[in-house]
Length: 123
Image (cartoon, rainbow, N blue to C red; front, top):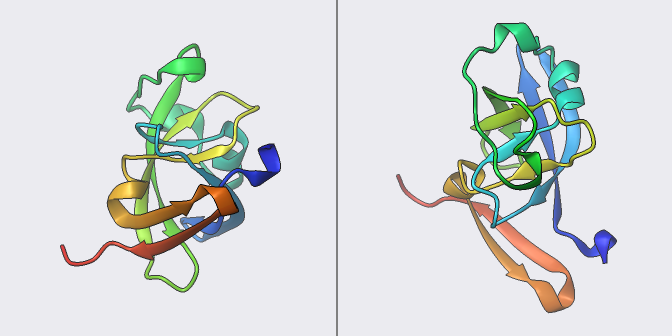
């Protein structure tokens, strides 16, 4: 069942550092979540990020900080994605309501383990 989860390949960029990764499309997640290791790979420094974010659910016990990175999905225009960068180490990159689903339209075809994605239309 896990291998049928909707993972989206994307490239995250920050200050000249780029990282090819996958994000779990999670319509039930309030926010995007960036795992600690990925933030480090992008050159983030925990002590420099001072805006705290409170997470819920199984991530509630971990500290999190607000960060914004550029994201490239397919050949679509780049977008800024806001993440709760968590100290949790054993979590996937999560693409949630704020702000991934504000930037992209996603249609799920769960019975076929497929989804379609496109940038939001208009402003």
